[in-house]
Image (cartoon, rainbow, N blue to C red; front, top):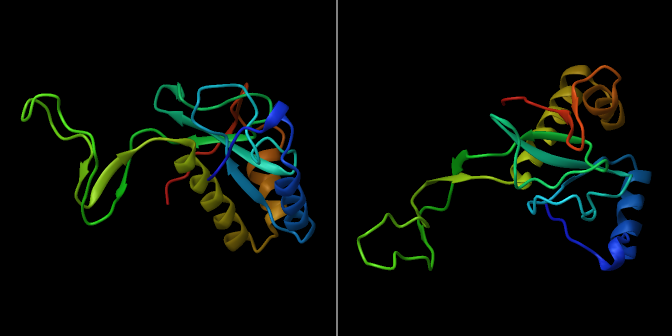
Amino acid sequence: SFSGYYLDDMEPPMIGFWVRALVAEGAVVVAAAGNDGSCRRKFPAAMPEVLSIGSVGPCGPSTFSNHGPWVDASAPGEDLISEFFDHFDGAFEAIVAGSAADIDDFAGWAMWSGTSFSTPAVVGALAELIETHDCSAAVAVEQLIRRPGLFRLPEYGVIVNRIF
């Protein structure tokens, strides 16, 4: 779920080399588009060999989700509840003690948002297709992402909404 900007919006050479090597071996590389609300290409997500994943919420595209013609698909990525460390209390504290809830004090559960949460939802949907239809990863991508007639949002790609 990592991604980053690179000098002159060009593909980072070493990441490009390794992504192409993985793809040549039959792997499907899936990467988060990023959470800057920008159309600027992030890598490796913006590489043509990589499936780039944005985020949608209950009202449409997430405002934080990066977007553009380089984004292949989007999946739910807003306000997802998931397990967290046993206990974590970060550095954020209310200006006046006791005046507000400690927003970074988590015990067992936390609410998250981001394309890093959308990305594994797409990977899970691909894995489900591979398992249930005994197909290759490339065939699963064709069925879930590339097949004509699927619902697509401009600059956010195909909407994948699977609950596992």
